[in-house]
Structures are given as structure tokens and as C-alpha cells.
Length: 330
Ligand SMILES: NC(=O)c1ccc[n+]([C@@H]2O[C@H](COP(=O)([O-])OP(=O)(O)OC[C@H]3O[C@@H](n4cnc5c(N)ncnc54)[C@H](O)[C@@H]3O)[C@@H](O)[C@H]2O)c1
Ligand SMILES: O=c1ccn([C@@H]2O[C@H](COP(=O)(O)OP(=O)(O)O[C@H]3O[C@H](CO)[C@@H](O)[C@H](O)[C@H]3O)[C@@H](O)[C@H]2O)c(=O)[nH]1
Image (cartoon, rainbow, N blue to C red; front, side, top):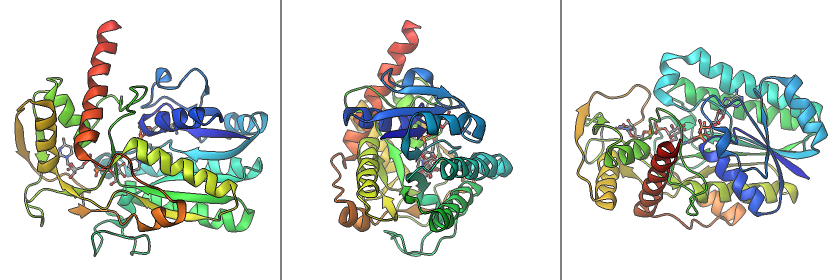
């Protein structure tokens, strides 16, 4: 048995590759390196530089490597960018996921795990939100992921493979052993941006919108440590291989923090008081989104081990410092 990880040279995918190798799995990565880095893929994994939409590259990998499970991270991930470039997002996230799925069906892949997102809920009526809530994405990014969820459901019913859709909330932090972290150039994620501001890699930062209907006026998100997230994938893989059936589940802690609370945590942990400027709202941002994680806990026995904002921030800061050293050495 071997596992194909698409997007394994990216932030979350590279953590997944380490987790699978730690468990003794045979791992192949397909990544076009649009935002990922070849150095992020451990040498024990086999990296194939290719596009997931290119079936002529993907199918031979699936066959020759005897892949039984695909964990599909590859995609475009920035909510406001999807508002300005919707067709690019539908192409990379929806059209190319369809091509990948067809390749998997052609090659008899048994299990498929998909990176979905809290953005499929839009602004939910209730916080925390559970999986049976209505789905009203507020951005092309959320729509592009929801369409892939639907394709998976229908293709699984027709072709008999099993799947898990994991809806991630806001992923942050880094491998506590320092082997992987967020290395994307021009990253836009809140915790990454704030750690860069704390380390003087950028001149302060902006808060997008302070007039949301939340206690301090800034958006509330549920930040999940990347190591807890990849553990959820590993449990999902074991569940599918054991014949546990299809699963759609939230990945978050059920605890929300506002943008200002996160910035405060970064200032406290780093000991640096960087400049924070008010800016206009960013397009596509819902006010509050917090997970109800009851389902994944009950069905997979998932237990968060890093659900502490200070730990998430500390690991993100450590990784950012290690990137600084890497850049100095290059
Ligand atoms: N980071 C988050 O907070 C978050 C939250 C919810 C969902 N997700 C989802 O998790 C997945 C991974 O996100 P990430 O934060 O690791 O992003 P990332 O940009 O670090 O990783 C994505 C990887 O996919 C590769 N890629 C992109 N398009 C490709 C294509 N067509 N063919 C081959 N490779 C391609 C990139 O080179 C990169 O290595 C994405 O699908 C994203 O939508 C992320
Ligand atoms: O410099 C910054 C960066 C972000 N924010 C705000 O911080 C919050 C979180 O933003 P960000 O870290 O960019 O994450 P999201 O836009 O919530 O999206 C992330 O989390 C989603 C799940 O909730 C995933 O689907 C997306 O792929 C991932 O980018 C939002 O209110 C932003 O407006 C700022 O105020 N200043």
C-alpha cells in the first residue's frame, strides 16, 4: 500500500508527508511547485513535479506506485485572491480536482481524502457550526471547494471508492520538531503575517475591518495547529482503510479568537510591540466562523494535543526564525 499526497511540497501537505513517513508508509508527492518548495519534501518521499490536472503524468504514478489512497491538498488557497480571479480558482480547485478524481477512478484508487474548508459554510447561523449546517460559501474559493465535495460524493456513489472530506478551519503553527512550517512566498495568513511583523521581516501589519458584528469589531476564526490537523488525516486514512465508510468532518477546536486577540498573542509570545494599522474590510471575509468538532472526535477518536494559541504562535515564530537562518545561508 502506498499513499499519494498532492500538494505535498506545500505547508500542510509537507507536514502530512512527515506524519506518513513516521508511520512507515510509502509516500509519493505530486506538486507543481507553484507555491510549494522541493526542499520541503523529505528525501524519503518520492517527489514528482507535475500538475494534478495532467492525467498523463498522474496515472502512471498511481499505477506504478500501487497507490491505494490519495490525500489531496494541491490547490489555490487565498480567499480574497479568489474574488479577483474566480476562473483561476475554479480551474485549479474544481476542474483539476475533477481530472485527478477521474485518474483515481481509472486506476482503481480505493480511498480519497480531500482538503475542504470552513469557507463552505459562509457566515453560519450558529457558532460553533456543525457539518449539517446550510452551505452558503461567500467566496469563489469556498464555491470551488464545495463543488469538489459534491463531485466526490457522486463519484464515490458511482464508482465505489471511499472518501473523507475534512473541512479545515484556520490552520497555523509548525512541526514542533522544526521539520516543516509555512514557507509560502508572500503569505497572507494572519498568524504568518503577524510573526513576520514581530521578527521585523515586514513593517508592521494591517487589520482588515474593525466594524464586524463581533465583541471587538474584528473577525473571529478557529485556529488549529497543523500537527493536530494532519493527525486527523492519519486517523481518517485508518478509518477508510478499515472500511469505516465515507466521512465529512470539521477540523477545528471549537474556540474562536478575534484578529486583535491573535495579534496580542503574537506580541506577548515574541515580546515585540510591532505597528498595527486599521485597514478596510477584505472581500470574501465572513465575520465569525468557529468549528463544532464533536463529529470528528466521536467518529475518529481525534483528540487535539496542541489546542493552545500560545503554542501555535510559538511554533510559528520558531519556524519563521528557522526560515531566516535558511535564507541567510543561501
Ligand atoms: N492553510 C489553511 O488555513 C487552509 C484552510 C482550509 C483549507 N486549506 C486547504 O488545504 C490545502 C493545502 O493548503 P496549504 O495551506 O498547505 O497551501 P500551500 O499553498 O502551502 O500548498 C498547496 C500546494 O499545492 C501545490 N499546487 C497548487 N496547485 C497545484 C496543481 N494544479 N498541481 C500540483 N500542485 C499544485 C502548490 O505548489 C503547493 O505546494 C489547500 O487545498 C487549501 O485549500 C488550507
Ligand atoms: O494581514 C492580515 C491577515 C489577515 N487578517 C484577517 O485575519 C482573519 C483570518 O485571515 P487569514 O489568515 O487570511 O485566513 P482566512 O481568510 O480566514 O482563510 C484561511 O482559512 C480558511 C478556513 O477558515 C481557509 O479555507 C483558507 O484557505 C485560509 O486561507 C481574516 O479576518 C482577515 O481579514 C488581517 O486582519 N490582517
